[in-house]
Structure formats: C-alpha cells, structure tokens
Image 1 (cartoon, rainbow, N blue to C red):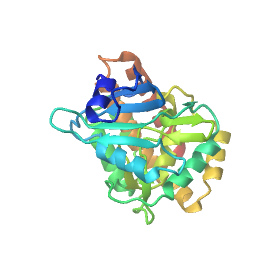
Image 2: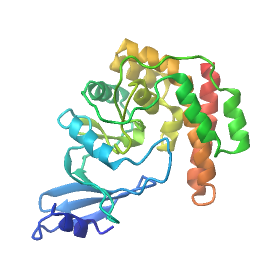
Image 3: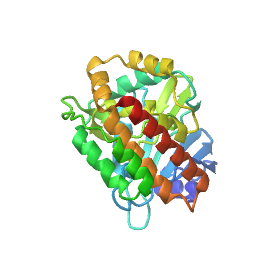
Image 4: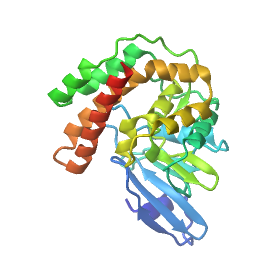
Length: 291
C-alpha cells in the first residue's frame, strides 16, 4: 500500500502537505502504516478481506464505529476518517497515532481504562457468546484445525460447569491482550479494534490477564500480585464473578485457537508457531489450576 497516495486519492491529505509513511509491524492480516509530517501523525489501516469464520474477524465498519463510540473516553485512538471498501480498493481507516509504548507494567491503569470502556453506551455491533456452552462450542470448532495431541490435551480439561448468558453486556474489544495496550502520558489506550462486539465485560479482562495472551505479545505471565491489582482496580463485583465462572471456558477456547494457529504457522513462520505452542502449554496448565 502507498499510504500517502491513497490518502490523497481519498481526499484526506491535501496535495501541499508533505508527509512520509512508515510500515508498522505486529499484525498478521492488515496493511498498517504511520503517516507523519506537516502537523499530521496518523495511522492508516487498509483491511484484508475476510476469508471465513475466525475468533478475531476482520470487521472494518465495526472498528470505525467503535472508535467513534469511544471518542473522548480515554480508551481508544481518536478517529480521523473512514472509507468502506469500494470494488478492489480495501476499506481504509485513519486514526490519530497514539504516542507511547506497548504495555509493560501497571495493571491497575488498564483495569480502570476497561471500566470506562465498558460503561460507554453502544449498539449495532455483533453479539458474541456469553454462556459457557456457546464459548466451548467455539473452542471445539477451532480444535478441528489443531494438532491431534494438542486437541486431546485440551479436551481432557474441557470445563463442565454451566454458566448462563450475561445479564449485562457492553462494548468489548475481544482481543484486549497486552500487545494492544499502548501506554502514554495520558495513560493506557486500546488499539486494533478490528473485532469489537457486544458481549460480557469479563471477556476483555480474561484476554488481558491470560498467560497465553501475555506470552504471545512477548511478556511473561502476570504474577499473582499483578493479577490481583488488576481485579481490585476494576472493582465491579458482578463482572469479577462472571470472570471467575467463565475463565475455564475462555481458556479452553483460546487454547484451541492457539493450537489451530500453531498448525497454521508451522511452515510459514516457525518462530510464531513456537510462541503459539508455548501458549497452548500455558493454557493447559491454567486449565489444570482452574479445576
């Protein structure tokens, strides 16, 4: 993608404004670049096509809608422009660059940000499962593409507890791992809102706290004190009770996702496949601890 030419074509960047584009790394699917110069500091995301069911689908219209809904709440980047897909031109989202670094420490501030996020009124997004049976069914679907041994280890630990659908639902990120948290002078922000949903707030807390999510983003699992600090800072007892009840189901599903991705990436990206293999092992240990 020539991000500068694309912005000029779409009318977001006047001809006289001099800027440069730098590719950004970290995602597997979309073409993302930073455009800087003459008072401009933007992220430009050109979305890949959706190619079937995923746990983390590519939903450009929803990402644009989520950034609009969260504007001013100190949760997400500020949107600049959005252009839906037209013919062969991909959907393009432009938003303000979030200054800072990927999260390293300080789980309380992340919890406080999520508490603000989950209080924002939102409608019109897809609904994701909030009952244990539906979450586990998604995990089984993912295991169809996993290694047989990984699938057997996870199925042996499949939780049996039934948890009913959530009475309270909110705007959830669904992929709120630490790699999508940028911490700057004004605190943390969640980026990469490509698959938002209306769901259980416990899902976002699970993603941030999950040992498997943490190692996929280059961190070690949180220690018990960091986890406790996060939960204390979030503070909503009803959501924390939901997390305690649903954590085994969420872990089973995410372990299945990691097992599937381990197979997907075995030849194309062995290093990434190895990270997913460790994530599967951590998930197995987590499920054993939660029994």
